[in-house]
Amino acid sequence: MFKVARIKLTAWYLLIIVVISGVFSLFVYSNLTLELERRVVIFRPRWVDIGFSQQILDELKSKIALRLLTADLIIWIGSGVGGYFLAGLTLKPIEKMMDDQKRFVSDASHELRTPLTALKTELEVALRSKKIDQKTTRELLKSNLEEVDKMQKLSNYLLALNKYQNGKIKFPAENIQLTDVIKKAIEKTKTAANKKKITIEANLKEMMINGNKVNFEELFIIFLDNAIKYSHKGGKVIVSTVGSKNWVKITIKDFGVGIAETDLPHIFDRFYRAETSRNKIATDGFGLGLAIADNIVSQYGGKIEVKSKENEGSAFTILIPTKL
Image 1 (tube, rainbow, N blue to C red):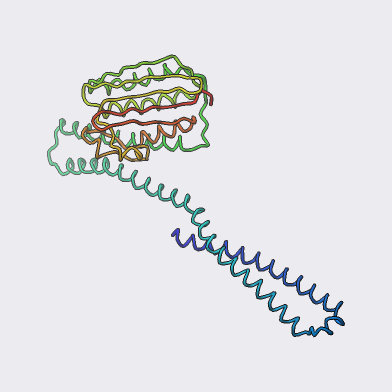
Image 2 (spheres, rainbow, N blue to C red):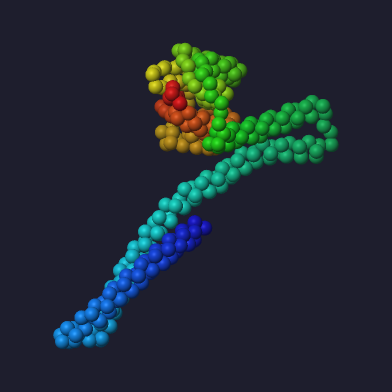
């Protein structure tokens, strides 16, 4: 599709150049020949004496036309090549956007298919059963509720991702105490940490930043949730903050399975999960958390640095400018 579009766009570029250069050449040819004829009329007696004739004048006109046409052909060929190149550059971002959109729809459909298939299978088995007691029914409903929760979580992730990717949405900002926001995020992830007997160690310094409290709370929950998820049972997660005149630096470090070097460039891609390095620990997720986190940080002009080594853990450092 894009190859045809590229050719069409090139053709439009070339058509514009052909029209412009053609009109310009006609203008030049008309003026040159008119000037030539005018001078012939003025100096005819003298030119006749030296053997100048109408035939020579016609030959001069032909040579002018031929040279202009040659120049136009060179311009048209160059324009065709350049136009094809520029058409590719013009369409490349659109092609990438459409490929991303197709991949996004495909990935989202795949993620939804799993819980929907589980729901359908369990319900079909239950309906085929002639005898189904209350205990079995409760277990079935409990299992179905878990699958519904997964779909709801995916839906919430997709809405959050759309919210942060939409540059038109402006979040109200205020001066917030970053330490309080981090503590609240730790509190909200404590249940998940307790289930795996993971200790969260906080080394926090009092720091003020201008931003949206909900945004930053969601950001820290994502990183803490990831650190807990990929930590070994009974492990530890360290949260530390460092402040300077221009930046605040928040580091969330775990000592879990780590990330393979080949996976590091892709961990902020939507729906990407580093299966090869992290499947040693069974986890639920959709590969959207870090994509959301990346969008939140970008919104505040910040950046995320990652250091990780397999079987040793990962450290995510969030750098946010103090003056937004």
